[in-house]
Image 1 (cartoon, helix red, strand yellow):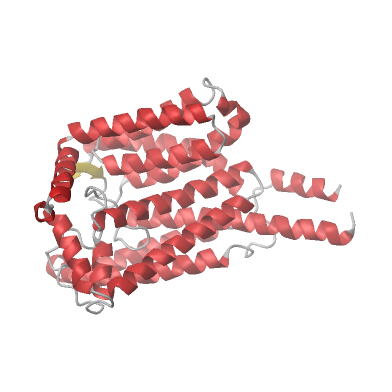
Image 2: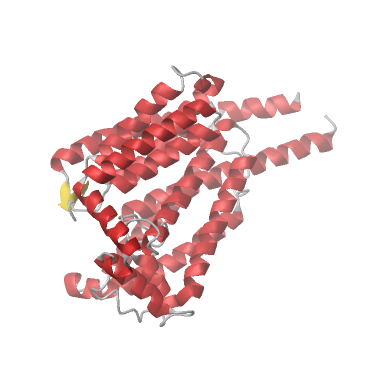
Length: 390
């Protein structure tokens, strides 16, 4: 009877409960360590830009700190509530995001050959789309339960939902971000218990669509051609790839020292955003780069651990979605910088400069902490029931 009462109270209240601090401290520490790395590297890669274009060496750093503070506030707010309240936000959020993505196609600001930002480049709806997709897909899969094994309840609506968001992002064009959103959705569909045949069908169709876009979109085709040329002859690699690899090679084992990078002064394009991992390798060496990778891997492990301990399917799907989002995005960025895959624009979570990316990633961390807090509270309640002998 005691257990039933606990579940009933949890289901009817949006409040997090009395113990709001019973969350995964290791996840929080890993996040804090990555943020410290990020702020050091953002300042190192932007002080010259700030002086040249804003007459303020900490201009970009200040904006990054602002995004971090706002994200931290959102984390604190999320921890005050049961994460199930996010179900009510999923439909409005993905609707507003879709409208903004459509609006972007007509009124967005062109930057580096793509229309991805609003409000003078300070807001990117595609960053919000990652979180919105996770919230909506997790809610949708949880509401369908085992019915997702049926084609009319599973494969067809999933394809429409994912395909619609994918198409809106591709039209910017931002193929790498669209692929990331599709990978996250595909992973959630798979772990939610979809039939293997459906997973294979989605995988084959999605792979064919991506390959078609890679050879038909001019910017994507050029990057693929540069990549294949580099495989045949490394001297034929694209300019950005050469500069990124040069930065990593210059760093050696322990780097040239924090702030002493040469590539960030114009040699490596977008050194403070997409190319920041190369600057980590140049200034902090292989040791610093491996430490960043280790922190990201540790955070991923904690995320999956939180998912495995979630008290229900919705919490499990939310935690898996946020974890694979951060893991996939980091993996793509590092693979690009090390020339494992064709060059594409993808920020490195927690390290790259960008307010939208920083804010959305921290909100994702807040969701993970909320799920972990709920799981910890559940374990405490079970121990109390056992100790009371009921």
